[in-house]
Image 1 (cartoon, rainbow, N blue to C red):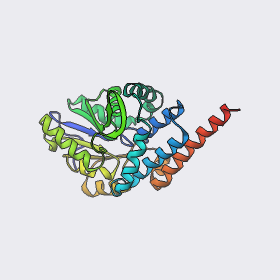
Image 2 (image 1 turned 180 degrees about the vertical axis):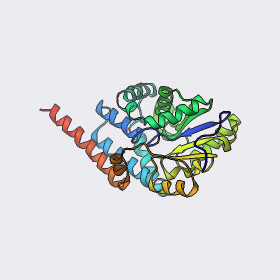
Image 3 (image 1 turned 180 degrees about the horizontal axis):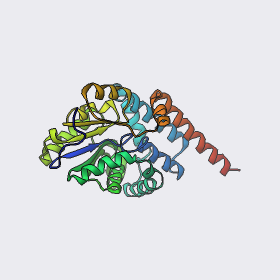
Image 4 (image 1 turned 30 degrees about the vertical axis):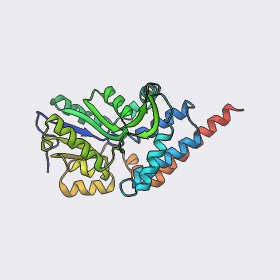
Length: 265
């Protein structure tokens, strides 16, 4: 079995965000925060929640679902000022996302920082949100999905593709080449089998709160497994992802509808 962490020295650790560093989907919590501030409608939230669900479940296999997730994620920011959304993102992170960071994951991050290694986020989450998480946690850098903007206003298009699945491995390989890192001395952490290309790229892969497929793969290959979920949380995560995602979206929409109904009385 591999060591839990490489020895001190040059190199880096790469962390996925959603369900690895923090509970749940960071972009969904951000979208809920925007909805709570009346920046878009419940219909927008429902469409966004469904797009994120199909992306999370089948994005690596169904190009049409990747496109649905991408369009849903971009539709609610098109036409908005970048600086305004970044400011809102900071507020929403502090209000409702900071408490979702797993303490166990925070300890893993700190162990790398204490050993003098760089720590980078590598996530499909928008790079602006990834940068805020990076700053709040004192990390080195962040790679995320980049939304196009012209003169500081989002266009509703991407610069390139979603940073998801094999794209993460490509981005990390490029970064390692630029920084002069030996990937055999680097670590990577993820919850998802979609990230196997990234995990297999480094010398010290780790499964964190893994899905069933990644857990099986990690066990078969002797990778360290970290599970920070309570038993009850683990059972919820083990539910079919599509059903769980759809339920979460429906509950969020019902709550927003209820609040608006009360406000019109």
